[in-house]
Each structure stands twice: as C-alpha cells, then as structure tokens.
Length: 322
Ligand SMILES: [Zn+2]
Image (cartoon, rainbow, N blue to C red; front, side, top):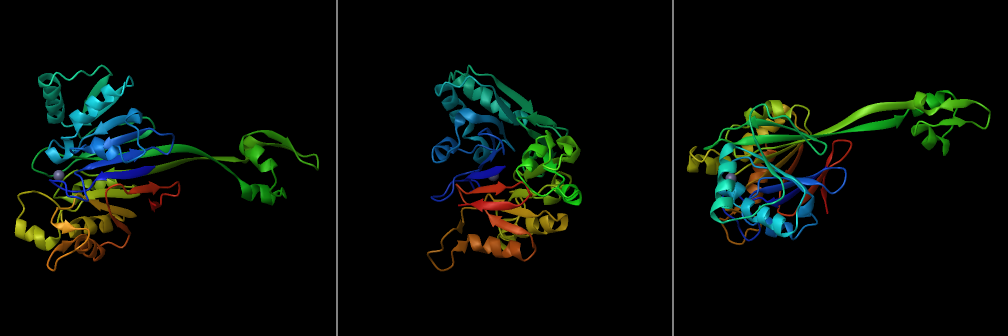
C-alpha cells in the first residue's frame, strides 16, 4: 500500500505545500483512492504517476474548502478525459450538496456513474480490496477519519516441516507452494496442499480529518500500522490561537499515538506559519513541530511533504520512497 501526499498545508497553500489531499494506492495494480481534495489537487496529480482514470473513490473528511475545493475541477477533468468507469464519493451530506450545486449552476456534465455514500459512524464499505470504516471527529463542522484496511490471502510454505522430513530446498519447493503433487528423487510423493499454510495478511492506515481530540480515533487505530493526522500547530502556538479553530497540536497527536502504540505516525496539515526552510531569525520551522512530537512519541515519526510517497510493506513497516 502506498500513501502519497498531494497537499500538506492547512487553510491556504504555500509555495511548498498545497492544501489537503492524500492518495492511497492499493498493493495490487494501479487503482487508487483519494482522501480529501483541496483546491488544485488535479494540478498536483499532474506531477505524479497517479492516473485520474484509475481513481476509484474520493473520501472527503469534511466540507471546509481546504479539503474539498478541488473536487469539481477533478470531477470535470475526469469527464473530459473520457472516463466511463464509476467513481464513488464518500463524505458528509454537505459535500454532496456542494458538488450537486456546482454541477447544476455551472452546467457541468458528468456522464460516468458518480455514486455518493454518506459517511456515518457505521460506514462499512468494500472498495477494490479496501475495507473502509470511519470515526466521527471533533471539529467546527461534521468531520471524519477513515480507516483503510487491505487484506490479502497469503500462502506460505511450511519449510520447518519440510526440513524435519529431510526435504532440502530445491525448485520443487515452488511447485509445492503452488499446491502441486511432486515426486521426490527418492520416490516419495508429496501433496503440496499438505505443506501450505494459509494466512491473512492485513494492513491498515487511518487518515484523520481536522480534529482537536485525537482520542476519538482510539477504536479506529486498533491494529493499524499507520496514523496520518493533522498537527496544525505546536502547543505554544495553539495556546496563543485559542481553541476555536479546533485543531490539534503536534504534542497532542504524538501523546495519543504513543498511548495507542501506533507503530508509525505521519503528521500533516501544517499551519503556513511553519517554514520548511527558515530564512529569517524568529521564523517558525517544521522542525519545531517535529521536535515537539518527538518528546512524546517513540515510534516511527514522519512529517509529510508534498509529493512524498510512503510504502506500507507486507511486514507492516513504513518506508519513505525516494
Ligand atoms: Zn483543514
């Protein structure tokens, strides 16, 4: 499973960061889905290998502009690109009302099937190999987190048993793993199915929307390998700004991820006041957020940059792809 950040700024874009959008690509094939679609997400896509024709679903966390102003443009471009495949849109009811209003008032023509699924507490969707569930968050408008779980049936060869029976590794192993019957040089006949161990290998990522209470993600994070969550400010700035915007500080999210023992945490949605490169004295830096999170979280911590791709591998480990 790959996670590609197309926008990591909160509220407004900066020269380095566009507003929220995160692409999740399945471990199989080129199909992908998008979580949030801030303005100009389709422009960001042009700089990646993700094909809009392979986009299967868009999940919107909430109706604020920095999370969904890119939707109409992307939907329209899919039409212009000759899309015929269905597209599923998941989100709060307000998102659908907004999309329908744009379609109506701008006379946008969409002929491919566009299906809307309203997100609720008991969302339970199966989409091209992803099992998708949700949790309601705490923000100024109805806002959601999504958990995307990908399961694959794995067939492993019972090499310990083969060793015990004195069968040394050879090209026959591959045939046994495929369930074939093989005859050994000493005349013994083996049924591959007797030496295959079936296992379910599942990986899950949780992508939160804007939220000032990370603890609301506790259930969704059970057994997940990665949490992607906003860290709009440091604690000090959050104190100055006050609670009204209803965002989290890096410390809050880091403490939560540590409590839940989430193995990897990717922070995103940074206030534009934090610079990737500090040029003048007194400017706030992304490293301030990193340093704060590191005080509370001992897992694998990442601060997302636009166009970064992270892979969640079969062993459940996260790597930043070069
Ligand atoms: Zn936001």
